Amino acid sequence: MGKLHDAISPAHRAFIGKQHIFFVSTAPLSAEGRVNLSPKGLDCFRVLSESRVAYMDLISSGNETSAHTLENGRITFMFCSFEGAPLILRLYGKGYTVLPGTEEWETLSPNFTLYPSTRQLIVADIDLVQTSCGFGVPLFNYVGERDIHFDWAEKKGEKGLAEYVQQKNLTSLDGLPAPLGLTE
Image (tube, rainbow, N blue to C red; front, side):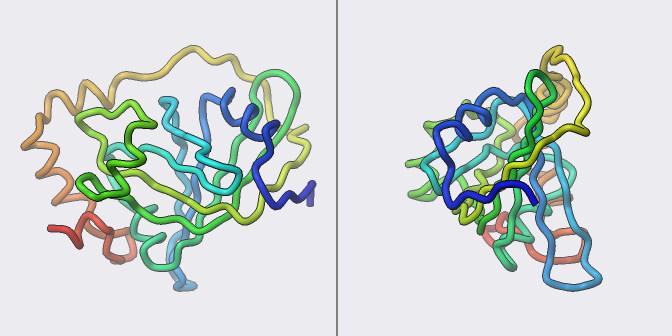
């Protein structure tokens, strides 16, 4: 089971800050619904306090995290050590979406490097932190970030990105509404 903690410690925060990738997982309440698991990079994750985190979310092919957290809030983050000492760290909590133009956006967005394709922030209140050995996680060398997304977004332009969001980001795979769809 690993070790359980009720808050994000300074050592956890330091570990998170060194990772180049993390994974976020959410799921709908329906037993037939699909669990979503997404890798994230680009230095977009922030520990805001010992019990609150957030990440900057870019426009992409789906919007599962927003739809699932709107329905039930459940969210899990996982960080793995791919370099150095082995460790897996999971953050469990309740998440929600913060959209541009809201008061909370104005408060939180300065913590991030925003891009033209930034669509939202995902914020989570963490109630459980779990660490485990990570002995089975392989070693990898970090080479760098991909810039394909930014090239794609630049080619789309502001209007094209807005159209893409309307076509691809209003509902989850299971048909749950995403917060972006509620603001249109």
